[in-house]
Image (cartoon, rainbow, N blue to C red; front, side):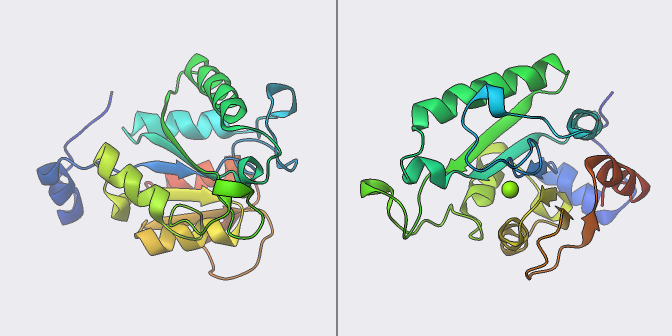
Length: 200
Ligand SMILES: [Mg+2]
């Protein structure tokens, strides 16, 4: 069961009062599915080991799962928004079947240099900018300070820090700044670490 009220800390009381909840933010490529460069069909979508256990643990803490993903492959013309949405529907179906619905998926199709036509532009949504995370905060009523983001790129970490996400984990070897709070070698390691810290 999900406990909405937690009197252990002033932060929790504030969260309760404002009816805000923490979320688990996930990058997609390299966190949910193996990075294979511009994945856009289910046949190439290989779930990373541990993703469903991690998300079930978050859901058990009443933390919605929110995906924030740069999808410049759309802007570059490699695949369409319709193809992305079809793949997203399929991915969400798999998550639901695994017992953990994805609350929301935010994507940014733009690229400032390589976008084609209307897709060639700067966007506040494109990580390292925080636009997608801030929109999720407003759409879903999230407390970013008690939220967690897991990414595989420095741009994920930068977006999270810029938005004020309280805890950042990087999976993999992108050593460019900014540094995350923790580097993990697997999603199972991420789950262990978060569980030990009580997800804060
Ligand atoms: Mg990634």
